[in-house]
Image 1 (cartoon, rainbow, N blue to C red):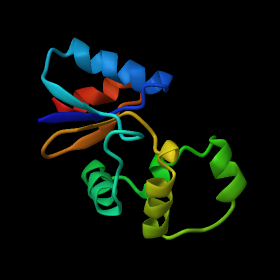
Image 2 (image 1 turned 90 degrees about the horizontal axis):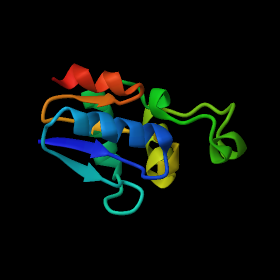
Image 3 (image 1 turned 135 degrees about the horizontal axis):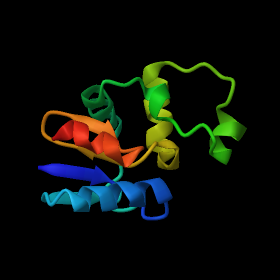
Image 4 (image 1 turned 120 degrees about the vertical axis):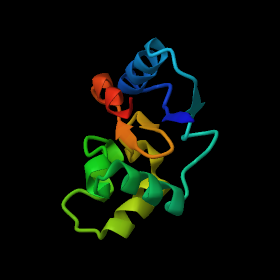
Length: 114
């Protein structure tokens, strides 16, 4: 089963969703900001599946990041906790299959799952 972790207000996330729709595959949309928020464990597992470090998936251009976290050093677990508590900081969209996951920016990255 394919899942897309989606933010309807994000241009890049909408582009990833449209790209996934063009692939003519079944998938589930998870609006992680409101319907199904990440837990520490679920996000840690997803990042491991993506084979990325937490710092690689943090949106550093966000105001909250600049005000509270910029220039500070955090462990991987602390960074995951920050993202769970501030989900707007998570790069999106994330597309997940049973075995793999990718950040869909640019949308062509989604092809790595097929």
